[in-house]
Image (cartoon, rainbow, N blue to C red; front, top):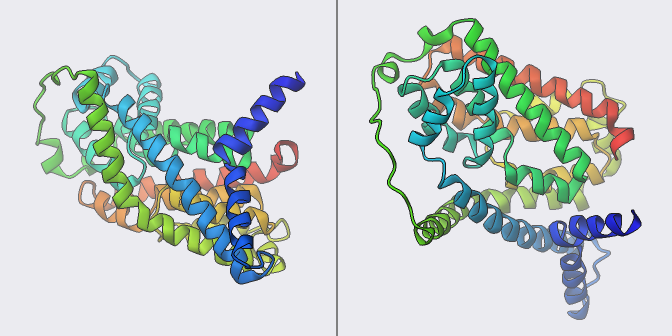
Amino acid sequence: MQIVKAIWDFFQYQILGMRWLDGLIAGGLSAMGLDTSTRLVGSIEFFLYDVIKITILLCLLIFLISYIQSYFPPERSKKILGRFHGVWANCVSALLGTVTPFCSCSSIPLFIGFTSAGLPVGVTFSFLISSPMVDLGSLLLLTSIFGAEVAVIYVVVGLVIAVVGGTVIEKLHMEKYVESFILTAGSVDIESPDLTKKDRLIYAKDQMLTTFRKVFPYILIGVGIGAIIHNWIPEEWVSLVLGSNNPFGVILATLIGVPMYADIFGTIPIAEALLYKGAQLGTILSFMMAVTTLSLPSMIMLRKAVKPKLLALFIVICTVGIIMVGYFFNAIQGFII
């Protein structure tokens, strides 16, 4: 058992967490005559370490997930979803969301396509909720920071929110609140051509490069904010606002996260710095979920596809679910960390 634990710790801390990289950067800065114990140099160390680590993970994960995604084009996904009914369709739709692009803005065009193809609105909303909130990338990245237990529970509760949210929308018969041009658009139901292994590798490489160019500026911003929190903001400030002594910390973190725009890669360094400074785990995860699921740009895009009443219901379902998740994680934090 000790051997298994040692192997897992090595995978979590040295492969995913890349602690060796942090030591390498610290050693390099020290060799240049810089004192890593100072705030400025400490910020530089944090910035370089997280940018390099997240960039490596970003490229590897996007390549892998895009390769998997090449087996699930919209036409095939539609056929898969069409075989299921009721809550099972919501479950499958939420699971399909885990192998799609990383940000909510990338998921909305697919949501529109699925809805135009005639899939139930509740089913397509389960996809829309899970796609930015839960993906294979989030599982590995969260494991690298918080550990496997936190990552697995995060993914499970994210899928639960997606299934419940889509089911509620379905039960309330909200189809009439989808914009008419989407419902009447229809779709071309053709079978995607079979791709060779080389085609899939090229597709994965192109997706990796495209997503990297789009996401990298937000990584720099997120890591920059994380470096400031990590080295310049006093621990007692963070604990006062987002720690256990503030019962409204989860709600505050959720509301702060909504107007921001980033994906899991941009929020990880901020979450890492907040955890180090004493913020509660559930509060941090609520912030991450709000940023990735309810960002203002994605809500503006979604408003083009649905009417205000359905948009408001979507926001309420996600917000309530995210807040509940935050308080749940805060309650069990002592048992999993």
